[in-house]
Image 1 (tube, rainbow, N blue to C red):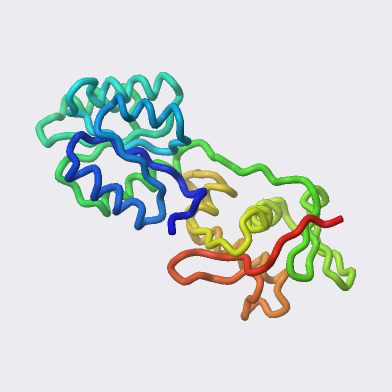
Image 2 (image 1 turned 60 degrees about the vertical axis):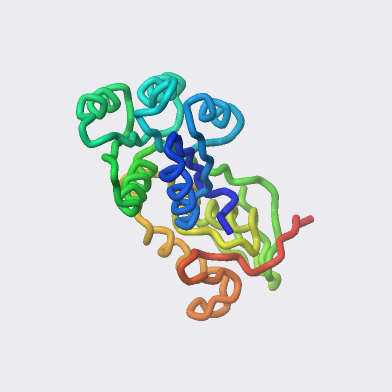
Length: 239
């Protein structure tokens, strides 16, 4: 199942044999996807859904991809990767001049497209989830996000960093849900170029040393191999 807070990608291409397989591939990589056969459909989706990235074919009937790209950039919209034909060097240059973030020549390897999407998302402005106020209880702990503290049922108080505070809050928002590294990166550190996947692993390790009875055998914040991490605990508002 795709993570409900994973980045959502809009794929705009009039070729169904490209649009639909690409949508399936990106979903398998953990992204949510919306599909549009033309610019008009794309505009409707953009008006109603939170789109984080647009994969946009240049050559389409009606309004072409360059026109839609120009409109997206003017609106301060999400990052855009253009799909171009081999001979369309001029269109590629124009697209980049308009503000497209990257381009890829057809036919392309889906793995290369995935790598380019990830790279652009990392360079995009951070979308850091706000840390909620209010204490919450999980396992034998009470989390106080305003005070940056954890209190154990036995009365022990532990200080946590701002980064640990935000990370724990995200897990408490979605208990028993597998959260991928990419999702956690987006919601904690933002998509900065210097941030790397293992940064999340390091933060998880530090958090485990504070909340797990045995950090080497975690029972609260567990690893889902190939998927990410999951908080295995019920969460309730603390009085």
